[in-house]
Length: 203
Image (cartoon, helix red, strand yellow):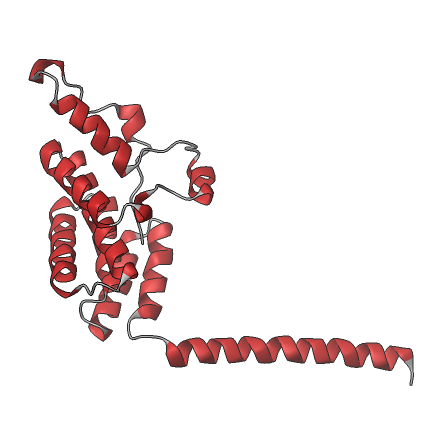
């Protein structure tokens, strides 16, 4: 057989195999995908790009397909938080916390992680609003619910945001507790440079 013909055959076979597996993967994902998941992924991408209104629209579409979709509720709450819409963010986090507290099963680690991050993010919201005791209470609930999921941003996030030692829920809770133990006129509740390093949580 001509070597050039054989080489072309091998290349075409490799391309066909790659295309076949890609098509199979997409079909498999679409067929097995839960309602709302596609729009949640779309919203997460928009949220990461700081396109908050389009992200909220995507999460709304996910909730139209699947009411009370945990990922969509969390995503919409984070979009509200990051865009400065504090009232809507608090209402969304509170609804998600109440919904999960009511429906969470003991053998659902993903749901437990989502509940912990909802508490943590609502705590961050309270913190930004100067409601430090409410923030502290939410941080404690977050840590009691699932401490592992709140270890802090991944190595990728640390590199991306340039914060090798970012603030975490645990660090912030410890700091607030120490300030509460001081006389009111000696408390320093905010340190702008440190607080700026605190990141939202996404399960």
